[in-house]
Image 1 (cartoon, rainbow, N blue to C red):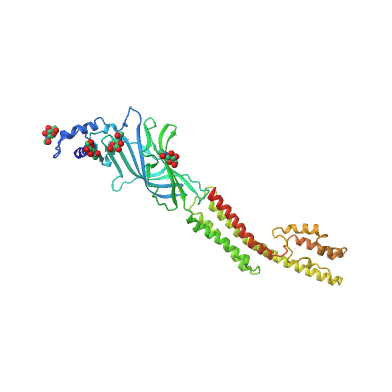
Image 2 (image 1 turned 180 degrees about the vertical axis):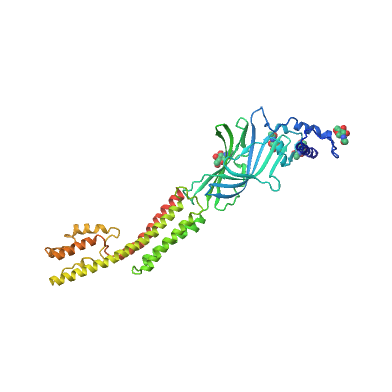
Length: 450
Ligand SMILES: *[C@@H]1O[C@H](CO)[C@@H](O)[C@H](O)[C@H]1NC(C)=O
Ligand SMILES: *[C@@H]1O[C@H](CO)[C@@H](O)[C@H](O)[C@H]1NC(C)=O
Ligand SMILES: *[C@@H]1O[C@H](CO)[C@@H](O)[C@H](O)[C@H]1NC(C)=O
Ligand SMILES: *[C@@H]1O[C@H](CO)[C@@H](O)[C@H](O)[C@H]1NC(C)=O
C-alpha cells in the first residue's frame, strides 16, 4: 500500500512540473503498470477550478479549531489576536483511490486541488505562518476525504462593552465564512458540535479567564446572496484582582487618609491643608493612571471611573470641610469679638451690664451643622416662647438705638455662623466614613450583581 502512496506523491510532483502525462522514465524497482491505473484514475479529468459534487448539490465542509493562543486582547483597538489551527475536511469523489489508507501530501501541492475559500470576516490582519515552510497540511483519504489544515494568526475585531470595566465580561466571536460560494454550493458544519473547538479550556490569558464557549452555525446575508457561516462564541471574564490591588485599594486608602484631617486640631492650618491638597493631587494622579490603557475617546463611563469619581468627591469634600470649619471658626471669633465690643460700649453708655447678650450663645446648644440658614427663622419663631434669654434681652432693648443696631448685627451674623465650629469636625468623623461605606455597598452591589 505504501508504494501506492508514494506514487501518488510522485504523481503530484510531476504534475507541478507541468506534465499531465505520466513521464516514461525509469521508476526504480517499482512496477509502473501496477501504479499507472490508480493515478490515472485519480486525476483523470480533475479540474481544480470546479468544486466537488459540481452538479450534485452542495459540498459539505466540516471545520474544527484548535486555539493555540490568544496573545493580546486590546481594549483600545477592540480586538484580539489569536493563533489558530483551522482544519477543514470535505469529500472530493474525484480523489478516491483504492485501499483504506491516507496520504499526506506536501503542502505546496495544495495549488493542484480544489480548496474551500473560507475567510474570517472580522479579521483586521491575518497571516499564514511560513517558517520553515507554509504551515499547511493536506491529507487525502482513500474514500476521497480531504483534510486541509492551516496555522493562522489573525487579529479579529471584538466589540466590547466597557461600561462595567473592570468588572466586565466580554463576548467575542470567531467567524468563518465562505467568500464566494453561497449556500447552494457549500455547506459548513462543525465536525463535533461544541467539542469542535479545543484549547480554550487550557488557555492562560494575562487579564482574562475564558468563562464559557460554544459554537453555532448560521448564514451570512449580503447583497450578493447567502453564504454559509460558522461562529465560535467565547466569553472572557476579566480578573478584577489586579485592579483591586492597583487602583481600588490605593484610592480607598487615600480617602481614609483624607479623614485623618478631622482629628487634627483646627488651628494647625498647614497640617490640615497639606493633607487635603496632597490627597486631592494623589487622587488626580491615580485617576489619570487608571485610564491610560483604555480608549478615552468613547463617551461611556466605566465602573472604575465612577469609583475614582466617588473617591475624589470624598477627598475633595474633606478638604472643603476644613475650609468651612476654618471659616466658621474665624467668623465665630469675630462675632464673639463684636459682641464683646458692643457689650462694652453698651455698658459704658448705660452703666448697666445686666443684659446677657453673649450668654445667649451657649457653646453646647445643638444646631444642625449642615443648615445654619434655618437658625434665624427658628430663633425668631421661638424667641418669645422658648428662648427666655432672647425675650429677656428684647424687652429692655426697646427704644434704645444702640441695642437695635446690635440686635440687627446679631441676626445678620447668625445666618452664617454655626454654634460651635468644632462640631463640624465631630460630625464629619462619623458622617464621612458612614457615607463612604454606604456608597461602597451600593457600588459593589450594582456592579457585581446587576
Ligand atoms: C509489472 O506488473 C505486471 C502486471 O502485474 C507484470 O506483468 C510485470 O511482469 C511486472 N513487471 C515487473 C518489472 O515487475
Ligand atoms: C485496511 O483494510 C484491510 C482489509 O480490510 C485491513 O486488514 C487493514 O488493517 C486496513 N488498514 C487500515 C490502516 O485500516
Ligand atoms: C473516509 O475515511 C476517513 C478515514 O478512514 C473517515 O474518517 C471518514 O469518515 C471517511 N469518509 C466517508 C465519507 O466515508
Ligand atoms: C452548544 O452549547 C450551547 C450553549 O451551551 C447550547 O445551546 C447548544 O445546544 C450546544 N450545541 C450542541 C450541538 O451541543
